Image (cartoon, rainbow, N blue to C red):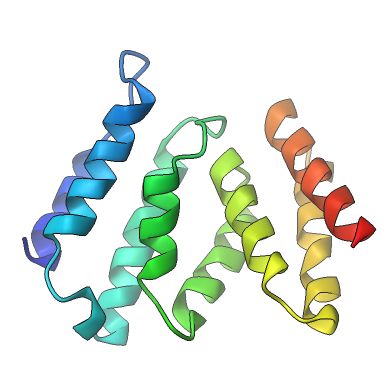
Length: 151
């Protein structure tokens, strides 16, 4: 599968109430397995795919349970430096609050050195305090914030 086909499939994939968790996992596992030469993607191609994946999250219910096939896929796209992924993750979480994005943000923060950690922990707090997000998303963000502050 080439990048354009993968992007089209992701854009057309909509989670429904009738779906089981494994349906979502199988979809992203298949995309990851069939997508050719991810390690040779240009920065532009990586950015396009990462933005498509974050747009997928934006289209879904913000309380959609975390899917680790999705999480591992999006995190692996921009290895080893994660510059594109990290920038898009921070941008997404500044504008959106979802269960998955707050988990991704917490995982990002876990990998930072102390000075950088402190700088980004406040983003979790701002999600927790944002009345535009659902109570569950806010509670998850607050839980991650409290966890990070205890470290």
